[in-house]
Image (tube, rainbow, N blue to C red; front, side, top):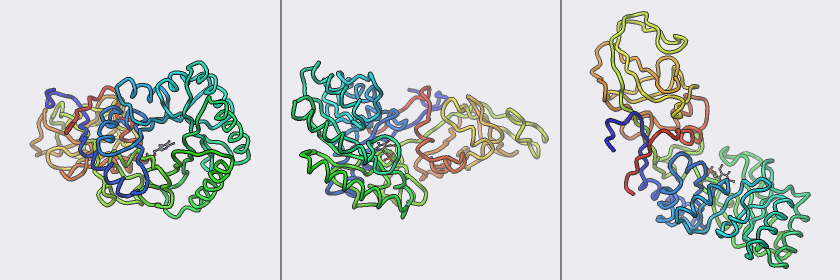
Length: 379
Ligand SMILES: Cc1ncc(COP(=O)(O)O)c(C=O)c1O
């Protein structure tokens, strides 16, 4: 691809992904690492990132939806693979036939997976999910005995094997949050109950990226890491990627589309929320909210152009935004604009955009749109 001719593109450094997985393995030396590649690898590309993570020693791959997991199998990824976001009537049989571990939070899901296993003539690999306090997916403690009992019975009939017991944190990204020890205690109780009833899981897991990085007591047999695999810090309070031993894998670049002189008092972009203070030059950056540039960062998003970090002038539109260069700048059409990257070339980071748009860095990288080409480095 001729990158200078490309409107906007995301460079993905697969060496960074590999280095991040190695760093996470060092943080959790007694656990296996699951690389979570849902939402197209948090915007980085699920298949290349899964391959890079496996190269670096990740033992498992995780996705939210069964469709995401099946797409990885279709791409030839045959590592242990788990998916957790199911709805009634989902592709249970395809998942069972593909040897994908499926999460079960409720009796309806156990019934559907048992039927699929019978139809496929195979034993389904299921992981029982406990709601230890997140209040989202997972089985409530009050319903756990019934779910575990039904799963043990299904195991005895040969339709399922309970391969995992697992849960998810609500506030692991807030150091010292009182819910964290409460969730760990609830998880231990729910594990102990299931094991007393005869469940012998291959893996017990609750830790996401922030817990992997900060809470060794949460590591159990497996840590499920998403954002950290891509080298982004889960929360500013936890430190920068460099402080956490991580390197951001995505750099979002655009090619300046137009530079022009305008007089003082000229309105810029929809709504004229920016008006030029003096005679100046404007640079048009051809990336907008359809590409994942947050409209909430209108008037404040940072971008490196012509060796300086500038601020989005006025509103971010669907396909483009403007920066006000000042009168003397030598920026020209075709010059590179870097919206975010690792930060060591002076460019802003995904965390900087998250702050500007009053959101989290997870959303910044994950929402980079489907029409933005991904260019892989160090494959
Ligand atoms: C169930 C589950 N496990 C693990 C993860 C990975 O979380 P993180 O990106 O914080 O590592 C997610 C992501 O939200 C998730 O939903």
